[in-house]
Image 1 (cartoon, helix red, strand yellow):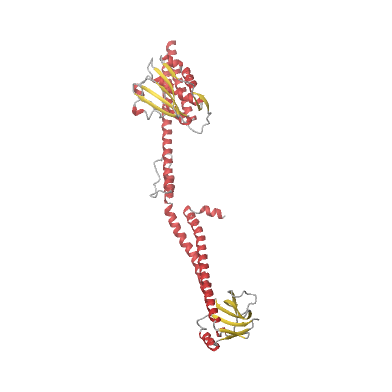
Image 2 (image 1 turned 30 degrees about the vertical axis):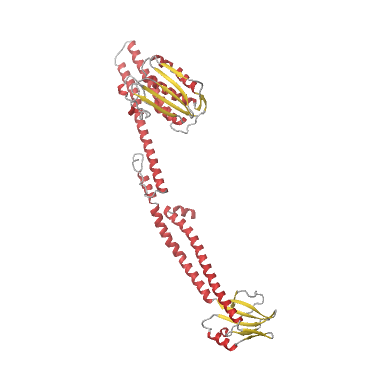
Length: 465
């Protein structure tokens, strides 16, 4: 039940409560220390006064023939009687057996009790007819023989009253102080966590259709400032991800509709009237090419979706870069031959890296098909591997149409194709380099592209040693 109630507390009240619990313990310790210091001071004062009385009265007595005699007894009694209203000190002389010999007038009918088992010359607390006193028993000697005791006591009633009043004041002040501190702590906590209220308000108005709102940053650069800034950065990433998803969905729908529309239009034209076998074959071949294009687009979309999550399990192994490049060139021999291109590999020795061979093949294959697509007939495509102190640099260079400088930052965007309207003869989906970028991040490969219009493009893959 207690845990449930604590869960119902607001964050502000929980902060104030935790603060008060700590403060309450601290104040309790402080009050205890204050009370102990006052009590110690009171007892020190009483002890000093008793010792002063003992020293004074020892000078006023003499021991003759085993008897304790006051030097000026009448004067002593008079002085003690006159001090009854101003001094709480009680004086009594007893013999060695504890029988009373003489006492101060302020004792009246009362007597101090001799404690046979009490240590001599040491102060202790006792009572005179329910009156609390502090008492000392000083032995009186004749030679080495104890012939009596001087008993001096002082009332503790005033001291007890002071300590009692102090205790009552602390007892009353304790809850009042805690209540006041709780209210102050609650007010300060409320102001301190004000950014949290802003976070809650902002979070409540954020939806998938409204991601523009951001949390106001506090003036103080504290933990709440960092929290607000972190959440704002998270919202930026979420907004960008959703925008990319919307753009990807829109572009994918457009790219998928285009070949379907072309196929549908071709088939509708084909069935409007009878045609000769050559026309049927031409249209059917065209539809097959569009279906192949559509199939290739779907494969690339599935590949992107498959590796969107970077926690995708990788099969890391020792891979020969020479073999990867040569295999990719061999698989693309047909399209390379159709454009009469030359692929030249410059390898000084066998180079190996630890990576996922399947994903690396996809990266190199996409780079090569792009190089083939944008190269002119009879051009040369170069494959190079250079070893440095920290990494292996693998590059694929062509002498094709190149990429405009302003488009270099956009070529990794999905479905983006640089100046595609100027080269309608070059077909593509605009997903190849997006896949290369995604897989390079996944494999921790440093990807760089250098390009100049009408001079060619160089794609560099950096593998850390």
